[in-house]
Length: 188
Image (cartoon, rainbow, N blue to C red; front, side, top):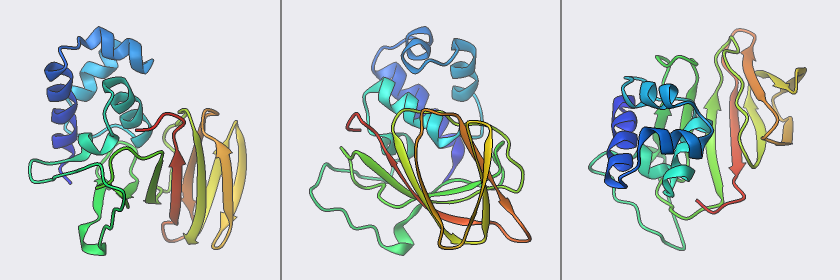
């Protein structure tokens, strides 16, 4: 996915809703300068930040991830074939992780399932409302939660309140691969 498209979608939707940068910043808890930087960047912010922005804009986060050819509807059943998966963040990002949305076609969901391959160096912490579940599919993941470190290996899982600052990184010679599910209290 073209990350520039994500930042352009944020600006376009904010303007369509006649919302100022200051208002979006206030609703997200981010600074006006940071929101402006996001809108003018060529790289997408972390997924947790995209969730905050989507909630503030009162839209599903997948609307921010859509390109002009995507069509999303609020349906009761959503099937995403493996060749339809949406890579959201690539190796070139500031945070260096891979993120693939697994249910990007479903609007109005409370959960966001994804596959993540964390970078080898932890770069930032991601506090956001809700809860998360992670299951390590491959490799070793060092999970950092409230300044404590936990080593998770293939087959291990963790469930946590995501409002607490958290981060992680791959450990070893290959990237960890993690199935994650983020739960938002407010239906997206």
